[in-house]
Amino acid sequence: EESAAAPLARKPAQLRGSGELILVVDDEPGVIMAIETMLQSRGYRTLSAENGAAAIAQFALHRSDIQLVISDVMMPVLDGIASVRALRNLEPNLKVIFMTGWVEPSKQPSIADLKPLAIMNKPFTLEVLLRLLRDSLRPE
Image 1 (cartoon, rainbow, N blue to C red):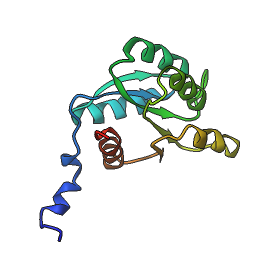
Image 2 (image 1 turned 180 degrees about the vertical axis):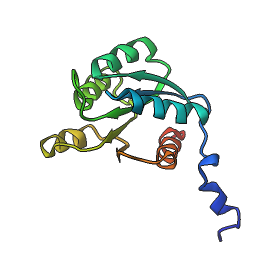
Image 3 (image 1 turned 60 degrees about the vertical axis):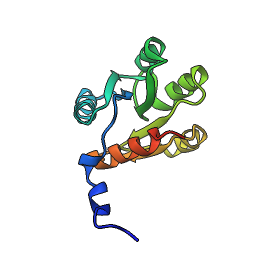
Image 4 (image 1 turned 90 degrees about the vertical axis):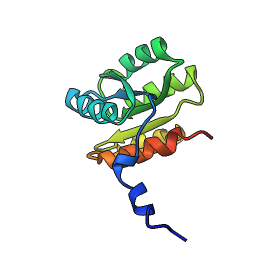
């Protein structure tokens, strides 16, 4: 039986981090800034990278602390698929959430092969992001 408090649990205010470090990868500075601001205001720590090559460099520096990567799929220099493949070579159990405005149909099988926790379509809401993070970072 659901209690009267159940609807409250769905409010974004309840969806908070506990200092987990999230690497945000996107080639649009405005997107990075928006996501970092949202996450930091909800108790997460963030690092950012403007492309896949920069993401690999950040990961190399902070590997033991990064608990999840949120990456755009389509980016110049090194796209999200190639960079996540490289990151998974370093850390096979790395948790990944992809975000995308559009995915080339030819890339969809590659994304599926990487088994991301989720694929968020841009634009997404803070609540969708926070719920995904909460569900993804729960202890197994």
